[in-house]
Length: 231
Image: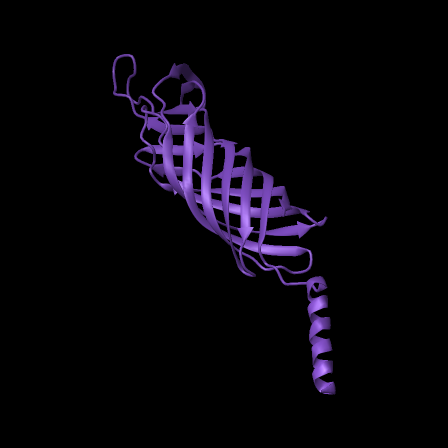
């Protein structure tokens, strides 16, 4: 009888203490905003060299960590993404242009904005105030012309021959493959800093009817820093 009383008292005490004990909870949702630099590669193909400008941008993320290792996120990013299409012209020999004639470089600059949406897997681990993580996902990249095109011609000595406006730009939509890694650093109970690197792989966009795109795969590197809030 005494043993039963002791057991009953222990169970009641444990039940009363249970709500005050810490329970492991791995689920976490966060929102973040980051600034980055977009550093692009040059591609060649179809007689064209395509050179995107390196420009700054911003990234918004909503991320959910669903268990100790795996999470998911949705992102939206924006940056300027001006494109320059270069090709070499060999004009025919004529009275006004005796042999040798040319070649000369023709360049078309297309101002544009890049909008990107992605859905990503986010594996991570939680160590003290730090959470290193990886990123692997897919999405869509929308390159939208945003200004007047300018066509310039330069001779072999690098002297500009002519410059004129051009028309015929259109939006290009491409699938994009995303990878990366980063680190969350908690500095307050619900606020922290997010450092990450994201790489984007996609086909070079065709924004103009004057030249063909290279259609080659290109890469954008995006080192970034931001602030997150989790709840």
